[in-house]
Image (cartoon, helix red, strand yellow):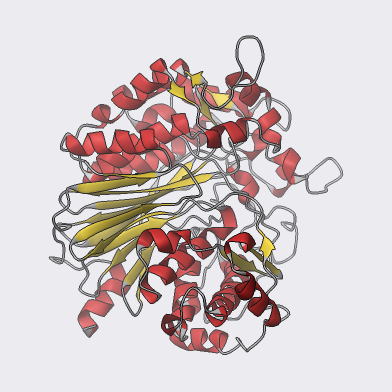
Length: 558
């Protein structure tokens, strides 16, 4: 790569004049529900841009996949502008209210609340940021009027949609929110029986909320009657929160410069902290310095390298990544070539008992934290006919968020993504609670460029703390092992973090599992949410899109 181009990519993810058409395609939408894909493709058919379609996709997901995302949560939006070659991030991560403190997630005796109790409290809800992020991206990249992007979802919310198998499993789930009063009420028939797959669900309250947002803009969620209702619902017991209308009015999404680094086959651009893009970059750079590319999906050594590199990455990420407005995050040190070489050299022929976090250049004193990040997230990708692209990861944190509903949408419980059990230490964790702070996020929507700065693809996944590992697996399969994207996404998931190695053991051959066990890698059946990898790659001038078979997603073309 020429030095000048490399410097531009590393510094600003921008190569002026490097934009270009996406080939012979007319665009693509890949998302976790067919109705969301339909909404997005209809916008593209009407002349909308990628971000126009992305707004429509998000609004529909909030209706048909409310266990995973919605306007009461947060989102990270990554855009690629084909006319300039510029990649830009829009950070809509939720923030803690001004009243936030470590005590808010503790009982009367000062002990940390159990997660199952904390995440149902009003105190768990952060100031939502998804709509603000989409609005900021739309102002920069939209082609159609904002008000034109809500019609499909408004009509569907009023007419109703048929509940699919995945939503039905969550309605009848064993997690705490499934028993929350608002969840039970929303998903019950008039006679009190719980809805099932095949039933039709209407949400006129959500339709009315979207009409307000379409008419008044994103600020309608942060000021006025909707904001007042959000505050009232979070202030209700149990565990009443301290969010105010001033907290909502003060919220703005951040426009951020992505982190971009060249790898052998492509340039990877990801969101900066408090997202976990630096972790994904570190993992891919660690693997890039091994011989994993000469191996394949059936090679035990390849999976061993993936597991050990993942453990090294998570040890560093868990210690150092937090909101950079509050803590110093040694991004450059974590991605320094010499530091990566030293970390990679720790990988032997058998699994290490444990990996401690390293000490990269610029690292402040930190302690390991107690963050536990459950899943309740979705990812989608849109590419338009002009080659503009959007990669979005969107969330309400755990399933149905806090289980509290306002005007047809669920509120997030994102503040339980902080490390609150250890917040009173003399040296606080990077992800400790603080007023106005954004909790660390594993969300890592990615944009891929070729080495000339042109669009090559977009990908991401839900999955809580497993997100970087899910994406890394798919990238490894697609680029190191030259698999079609659908096959790369379908590869077994393997998430190695600390002493745990969770994975889809039943998708691995008996021989592969036995060979890994001989190397000290015992693959345990995973816990929590499956991956929901959705992505697009540009190959031979054509868009190769793929949806994770573990969910209900599809690929749509205008």
